[in-house]
Image (cartoon, rainbow, N blue to C red; front, side):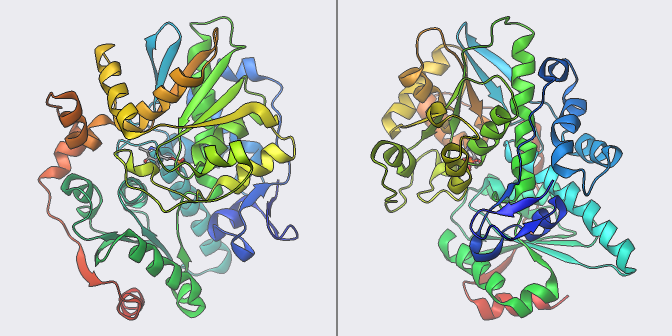
Length: 435
Ligand SMILES: *Cc1c(COP(=O)(O)O)cnc(C)c1O
């Protein structure tokens, strides 16, 4: 299977090419040249998650990875569960936050890290020399932690993560700045946009990019999306054990860059029985407005308590649009709802009364489900982060203290190893070129 550039259709690469390159020419996203349709869904659902995931992903990667290699990668990457928890007879949450950094991004980042590691090793063998890669990424929270933990200790891959100094919570900071070894962190004197601008300048500097083998590991990388397809299969597998009729299954997805929705649509296109999707956003409502009016008019990004979804120009949308427009999935299988801050808070309180402690992102998705699910539909919403990652907000809304899970408690006492740096490309360039 090849992947082609949605903007420059002549550009085609294999899976390894798409993973190493990230983005195609003219900032185009890579997309599979054909969507594998699985005709043995029931058989697949009966398998354990790792085994099933190998079968689901093999058609995409078989040009570059054998079944045995893919099995090794997935076994390493998915070493924690995706867990469906019932909320009431018609609703369940798919908890995706049981990985090392307590967010669903662990699935994609870990799979990507293991794939890159395998491809680097193959390249080194073919060329007879070790080529070093540098992952440069900007983070305002979850991505940095997931990427840092996923790549920690991998030979020949250097990871440099930039974040806005003083603008993320201490616990968030400690989750990715205390690892050391091949994980370097830069506390930038500026805001998140400054950090992103520095990443962009680095990629635009072709000499720098080539010298240090630059890659970004961000959520447009096809490997991250493919990993996420697997937990939709896992959710349906768990559901099929307790429910005989799966014909009215709806997923509600808390959306920022729309990677999770893209992965869900892949799963549907491959034959997984999902009736439709609700893309839930916070006040950053470019997509719901677009689906209603047909006009793409992003507003200025606004800050909300579901801050991982504070995105006004979602970078995965071209993939969603492509699938809807070309009939890879039915045009009417995606709707979108924007949920405001007050609704988010009251939903967290409502869920708490049902016995479930939720953080703001999942609450947005649950509310969207309550708002637009029809009679007889069974709704699954995605739990994208552990509530303890948003401890202050959750405690203040629910009015009760929250314990820290081990992953967070462990890093709370560690020393931050970051280097301070002004938001200045000349300094960053010099830093990246030394060592
Ligand atoms: C990244 C993130 C999202 C948004 O996911 P997309 O795939 O970018 O739409 C939602 N919730 C949390 C907690 C996240 O970290």
